[in-house]
Image (tube, rainbow, N blue to C red; front, side):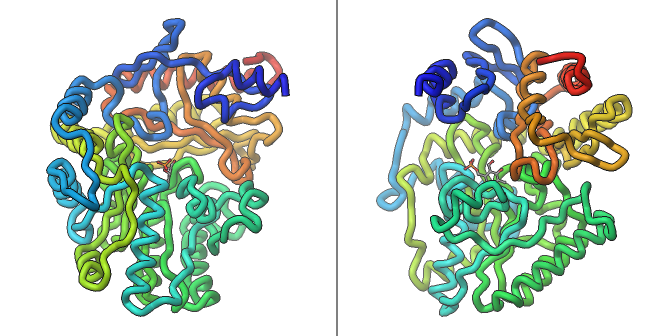
Length: 459
Ligand SMILES: Cc1ncc(COP(=O)(O)O)c(C=O)c1O
């Protein structure tokens, strides 16, 4: 008890819940600007991963601060089951226009998990209202991440959750995610993706199409897969399978949407395989206010409105201050051309990482699109052997990062079962000079980590 108390006290605040014996205390950050953060001792860090891929427009932006303050002064709150508010009406219209045909209706939420819950509830209610009550099953991938509510935890492809969920929540049926780096011996990335698409059809047949409501996938992976990008053929295949079996295809773009991949939506990379529903969050309000969304076709939402309407809400949905934050983010995207910038800056960053890979054998793979990149660490590049779990590689890279002035988002996904990686996803506002500084500090970080693993240096 005393050691737990002291660990929690040492870290304080929300972190008291995330700490564990032996954990290295996290810095207390007291200000941030652009891609930088400063702790209470005055140390400067680069926000390498935009937190967990949230801070797309960078920190401390005065335009954002003014927009939030102005909205708080004008109208702070309006409960959407009783009254409408202008920021909500204007914001969803603008978001839908950027999303394009097929995504005319936007249901706002307070974050990613809530958006995902709402997407599934919307589809379920639509199925019930249209006489397809048997549709209860949601297929997801192993590994994957869709949130931290009880229902979304049950959707996650994370083997470490098994004891937590066992007997507690109904775990969704899983198919293999189209991983690209460590694929079975008889496959390359393309043929494995083809195999994974086949697994979707097999799973639908096994469950009975009349029972399958949706297939949910991160079109570009986040932390769960280390930014896996499936091949174009995979998307065409899953689109065709879902259509043929009357199964809704849902893209979880909570992390990879909002221009991260060099398109406004990741789905825009594969326009001939668009999903039925998209969920978004994170970069929508860039961390300035909680915000998430479900993008849905007018035909579905309007038909449901004629039948029963959607039943569910949360008190903070469509909050005017969050909508104003979302609108201000879109203003900055337009003014700074951030979607294109993500593509161009992403190329520079990837090129720098690839150069580093040539110098540092600990880098096994670099994956992703635009400014959504992940670096996978390995013990041996020749056979792709992962670093051993017991040394907690994701913690080590985080700690060496802090020592080199970097805040790196790195956690063991699925307990490290599929390997160890970290996110390189800085704010979309990052300049070329800042990319070069980030790369220099990352090289030192991984050099120090390599030395430690060789027994020559401790963090
Ligand atoms: C792909 C994906 N889906 C869903 C979520 C859940 O979002 P939130 O943490 O905002 O609830 C996340 C968060 O990391 C995510 O990366």
